[in-house]
Image: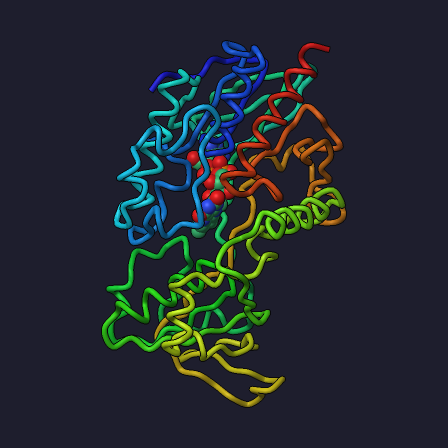
Amino acid sequence: ASRPLPDSDVLVIGGGQAGLSGAYYLQHFGLTGRYQLLDAAAHPGGAWQFRWPTLTLAGANRVHDLPGFGLIEALGESEVHDGTVKASSAVPRYYSMYEDKFSLAVHRPFRVRSVRRDDTGFVTTLSDGFDITSRTLINATGTWERPFVPHVPGIEEFAGRQLHTHDYSGPAEFAGKRILVVGAGISAVQLLIEIARNAPGAQTFWTSRTEPTFGSPDFSPDRGREAVARVEQRVRAGLPPTSVVSVTGLPLTPAIADARADGILSDWRPMFGRITPTGVAWDCGALAGKTLDVDVIFWNTGFRSSLDHLSPLRLRGPGGGIVMTGRLATTVESDPRIQLIGYGPSASTIGANRAGREAARNIAAFLAA
Ligand code: FAD
C-alpha cells in the first residue's frame, strides 16, 4: 500500500460508502491531488467486508449505487439479483472497482489514532505515530467498530455466552441452545428468524426496550425522508444520533410476515431489569417476579459513531452529541472545517452518497475562499 503524504489540503478518514462518495465529489469539485483518504482496513469494502457471512446482498435493506458507477454496472445484473451472493464479498468487490475506476487517493491500512488542531488546521496522528497535517477534515469512520451493549445490572455475572451483532458468524453454533435476542431493529429480527429456522433444536426468545412495530414491506420515500428528518433534527440540536432504522419501524417483508405466521416472532417480551448467572429477570411491570433461563444473550442493540479519534477536538456539547449545521447537517457548527459524513441522518448508503457531495462542496468552497 502507498504511504500517505505528510500534508494535504483535505484529509478524508474512512473508506466506506461515505468516504468514497466524499473522495469522488472532491475530485468532481476540482480537488484531485489536494486530498487523501486513509482507511484502517486492509482491504476495500468499509464495514461491509465484516458483515456476517449469511447476509446476502439480497437480504440487506438495499445497497445504493455510489455516484457515477452503479452496483449493477460494476458487478452485473445476475450477481446483484442472485439471492445467494454474500454482501461481505460483493460490496467490497464493488468498492474496489470503484476506487480503481476513479483513481481515488486511498491509502490503507492506516488507522487514525487522534486528531488535534494546530495553527493552520489539523494534525492527524496515525497508529504508527506518523503525523499528517491538513487544512480541513472529512470524517467518514462509520459505526461498525463501536457495537453498543446497554449496561444492565448483573451483566458480568452471566455464566452463558453473550455476543453482539458485530460478532455473529451464522446460526450453526446455536444448535440446541436457548437464545435470548435483544433489540427491535432489523438485525435483531433478521437474525432471530435465521437462528430459529436454521439452528437445529434452538429455542429463541425475543425482548427489547420498545415494543417492535411493523410497517409496510418497503420504506416508502416519504417514510424514509421523515425518519431521516427526525435524526437530522437531533444532530442539529446537538443530541446523539439515533439509527435511521430505529425511527422508521420494521418493514413487513415477506420473510418477516412468514416468520410471524409461523409464530417465530410472537414470543416478544419487554426488556428485563437484570441479568442473573443463568439468564434474565424482571423486577417490575407485567413480568415482575419472572425469570428466564437462557444459554446465550444475543445483543442486537445497535452501534454508536466511531469518533474516539476526534476526542482531542472536543466537539461534543452538553447534549452529548455534536451540534451539526449546513444543508444536510454535515458541518460541525463549532468548526466548519470539519465535515462528518455517514453520521446521524447520513448513516445509510444513500445518505452517505448525498452527504459526501455536500461535504466536498463545503470543503471546496472553504478552500476557494
Ligand atoms: P463504514 O462502511 O463503516 O466505513 C467506515 C470506514 O472507516 C471503514 O472502512 C473503517 O475501517 C474506517 N475507519 C474507522 N475508524 C477509522 C480510523 N480511526 N482510522 C482510519 N479508518 C477508520 N445501510 C444501507 O443503506 N443498507 C443496508 O442494508 C444496511 N445494513 C446495515 C446493517 C448493519 C448491521 C449496519 C451496522 C449498518 C447497515 N447499514 C445499511 C448502514 C450502512 O452500512 C452505512 O451507513 C453505510 O454503508 C455508510 O458507511 P460508512 O462509510 O459511513 O461507514
